[in-house]
Length: 285
Ligand SMILES: CC(C)(COP(=O)(O)OP(=O)(O)OC[C@H]1O[C@@H](n2cnc3c(N)ncnc32)[C@H](O)[C@@H]1OP(=O)(O)O)[C@@H](O)C(=O)NCCC(=O)NCCS
Image (cartoon, rainbow, N blue to C red; front, side, top):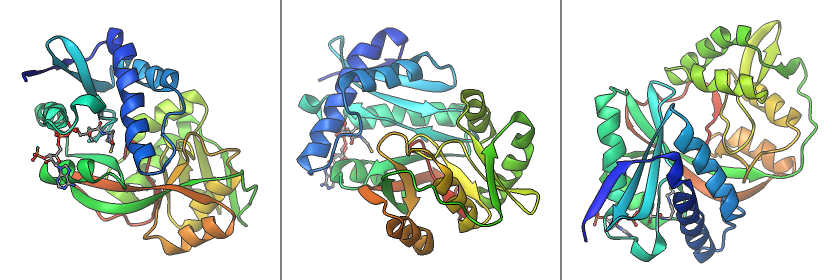
């Protein structure tokens, strides 16, 4: 079985989207969880946008000219975000995933990223094994949280839409907490209208690109993150990702009525700073 890996193009969206939907549905349902993508069109639409986005590197794997899997890498920051990676369920466990991971790691080395990160489906023994063998360390256990909008306001913490003028302050905050900024992602989120900042005593003390699967948030304290979660009108996609090691924030979410939809794991290879503050990672990392 000869596996060829090449760069992805927007024309691959239909095939890759179908495989992505099937791969996640099969593994989720085998473990009694809901699929991350509710329908094949949703997966195809997400991958079509990634395949057409020059800020994302994409690769597809082929056997005898037939697409059997794909992988992606978010190149907007100094730390690259790997995934979603999916392989056709009929040919899984035959090293295609490894080829697809090797391809994005070669690219990360060429482009001199400081590190790579990903979010792993916590119930999936195969992906956990594969990533660990490829050098990734487990950094955080995460709970994907979903539920009705909380409508909770945190005293002295004002949430408002973020603007371009806030980027420098948000980047300083992200660097203070994580050791690097995610300014390009924030810029995109501001353009899409989803980014929010929290102000406390006249200073920006937190921000979120989105409270949901595809958004990350950073705060000086848990109150900043609570204000962002409390104000969100919905939690987009399967939910937002919460580091369960942050027991105080985790219990606040649970006692506010939110439910855990699935466990996940933040893994990293290369530079990683122990976070010095509160945060929610996105599905990209
Ligand atoms: C995860 C996924 C991309 C991996 O691709 P794949 O082609 O099936 O995986 P590979 O065969 O390349 O690698 C699997 C590795 O895990 C090992 N492995 C599998 N199950 C294992 C277990 N229970 N314990 C230890 N090792 C295990 C295999 O032996 C192999 O390692 P090796 O290459 O050293 O032999 C693919 O299975 C998939 O699409 N899964 C569904 C979607 C998904 O979960 N995506 C990832 C989201 S985090």
